[in-house]
Image (cartoon, rainbow, N blue to C red; front, side):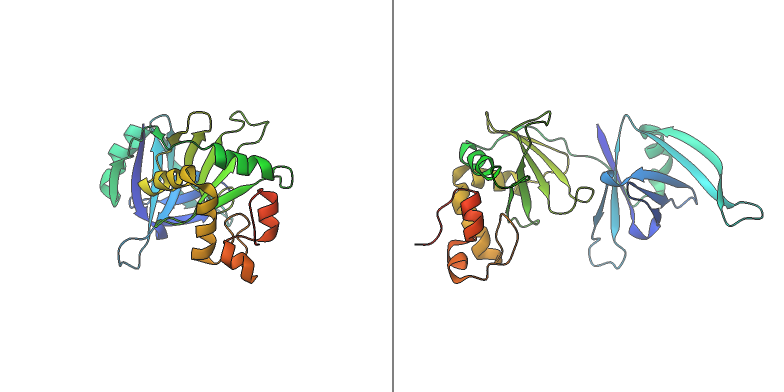
Length: 245
């Protein structure tokens, strides 16, 4: 099971490509993987929050920093290891909030054969075909797992952003139409997938008309016909969709 603790974003002390060093209110620090941390706004406060997700199987290491003698480096003192349960129990009072992560269940989103066909058709022209749909919480990106993936042919559902920045919302079995959501998935994501299942070409067109950008390549629609259709001529060819008269 996953749990989440909320801390202030200004408690981040250092950042690497893969992890963040976070300062606790007790002057102790701990490293945590970036992929398990999300930045969120805290109402009207100037202090934003971070939500730190912790699995029951994780081991958290804490330490107190101290200057090393005769150098500019930092040494660790009072190092300790904690299970997830021990860490949450010990530091709960120093956090803004501690909550169990929501448990999500598989959801039937419908027949996705047309959506799979769109993405499969584009593999002849693109290495990583994908498309977007707009939700109140932001864009949702759907892509098809490659033939070498352990989930070959499945649909991956994420937020926008780079490899280390995008939030993973779950995956869809294209044969059954069942969505296996992650703990970060919201009802908006499920609703977006259901709209895709009903009519992917229509949803693709609506995205372009709503945002002014193509849902496939994210580029602005500057051509009058592209604006009218909702996606560009090149993407229409790649994804085997009608375009123009």
